[in-house]
Image (cartoon, rainbow, N blue to C red; front, top):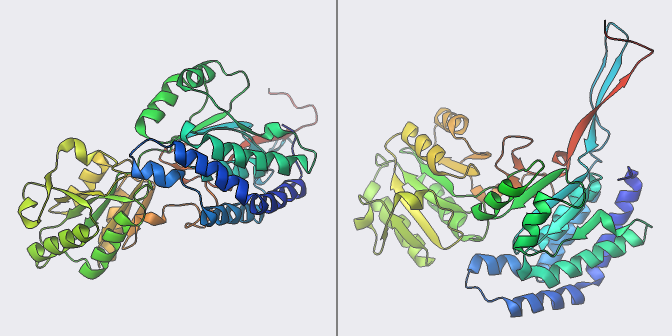
Length: 398
């Protein structure tokens, strides 16, 4: 695609802000149609699908935030002149065409597209069928914004493919694909990895852990752990697992208090056999459940006798997304944060902050649990690759 000047890109985004604001009626009507057609019982999926004025305001804020960010394209990474006279400049460059496959969330149609466009990439949006009308209304807004500045609509395209068509598209894409980002459950990710013929950047499962050490500030740990679970159960950064050191003072009382608070929030508890007697109602905790991302009002609670045991359990079972330690000991916290293999590690703070907007990145394409090409929130600066510019005067390799 043509390299666009920063001013042109920002003018498109300014138009998009105005178009979104003036298209609320059409967007909400389209979403109402999707909600009416929703047949599932998955509360998390429903929460992701629903669009209201607050969500439209959030979409507008995301576009405005990206418009205000520095253009990530053409930034110099290194600039060297070698002994042979070659002048070698390494600069950031667009990927080209990015495809994102996601389920339910219409806000991704805004955040993914604004990031890709500002980074001078084309984007193919493969949203879920449950959000087809909302996604189409939002892409129509994008096309209006592009048309206002005489840019073709193919900068931002919505794909409406069934599973079989998507599989064929990945195997034999009718156009060049440079990067695919699957944003969803493990089945979706496995499907894309099996069939894709280009680079895939994984936005994996959450299954986030908290470790409450023996010297934790209990009131802080209680407040943060409960809120991290119930604040938004449909989010990949919600808390799913809690490990408690049995050396915590008043251990039994604390565990019962934790269960009481979750009970008040109607959160189902799965507990280690050694802990089940402390709760008014708790289900057995299987080994499979330790590895599961719940996306539901469900929490698993177990014990970890020491820091190494907690780290081992988290590294074995989590999705590599986020993990917390509650402790007053900064050295212990540092050891935990260095040894836990997650994209974001926390000391005395909620996993719900693993989010582009909350981490100062602005809008996000996804939360990457890969280690290449980036890990954590995929913001504007992460949607570029690099290119070497080599300037010579007839040099040959001798």
